[in-house]
Structures are given as structure tokens and as C-alpha cells.
Amino acid sequence: MPKPIHPILLAGGSGSRLWPLSRKSYPKQFAPLLGNETLFQASARRVMGPAFAAPLVLTHAAFRFIVSEQLQEAGVDPGAILLEPEGRNTAPAILAAAFWLQKDDPDALMLIAPSDHVVPDAAAFRDAVALGRGAAEKGRIVTSGSRPHIRKPATVI
Figure 1 (cartoon, rainbow, N blue to C red):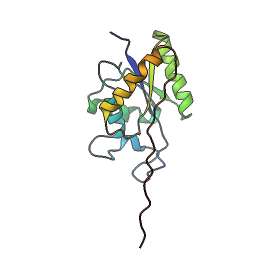
Figure 2 (cartoon, one colour):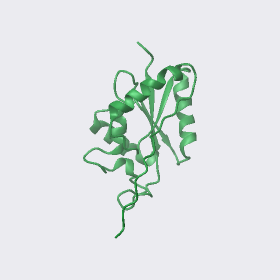
Figure 3 (cartoon, rainbow, N blue to C red):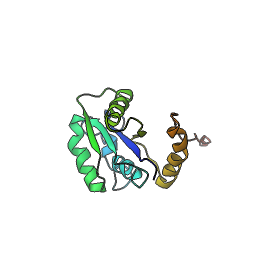
């Protein structure tokens, strides 16, 4: 069986983009924006399965209880929850996760996953991750994204 991929869920954020629904004490990934499940819960469930280890969550110390509660509600058992005393953005969070994983497995495969993205097709996401596995196992950095869609402007009458 191949080595599991270690999902790293980035769950920080300032909560300033969707105020008043999202705010500093409750960023958008923890709010149920598209139904009953939060973006954070959907992100955690998206990386469940035989190809994945338990997710490692990086979040602000103020969100530790929200993270634990929402993971439990979603039926996700986290590998660890690393707490930032203050937000330092994405690169330091990824570095902290890499150091954490390196202790037990210097060759661990990491999947960096923001927890505030909407991914409507979880199976397609997992398929895309599987496509990148071979390159990652050879030491390459694999990135992915969505193709932009250009919409025609609405006709104004």
C-alpha cells in the first residue's frame, strides 16, 4: 500500500472579507455558507479516505475550540491541531506543518489545502490529487488550480 498523503488544512484567516457573516472571531471557513456544512468541515471531509492520513490542522489559538467541535461534528479525527499564537500567513504555516511531519517521516507527502475554498466535486478533487502523486513521490512540487471561466457581460437595457 502506498504511503498516505498528509493533508494540511490551513484554517486561519482574518474574517474580514464577508463581514458581518464572517468576522475576526469567526472567519468564513467556520460559517455554514452553502448549506449545513461549513467550508472547513467540507475541506476536512474532502481529504478523508484510504489515500490520506488524518489531517493536520493549522489555525489560530482563538479557533482551537471551533476547529475541534466542527471536526467532531463532521466525523473527522484530526492527526494534530497546531496553534499559531498570531497569524503569520500561509508560508510560515506550511513550514510549521513540514517541520511537524518531518519529525516522524522526513519523506512525507503533504497536501496543502486552504479550508475556505468551495470544491463542488470532492471525488474529482481526490482524482486530481492522485494524478499528482507520482510526481510528488519523485520529489517534485505539484500545484493545481481551476481554469478561469470568462462570462459574457450582462446586457444593460
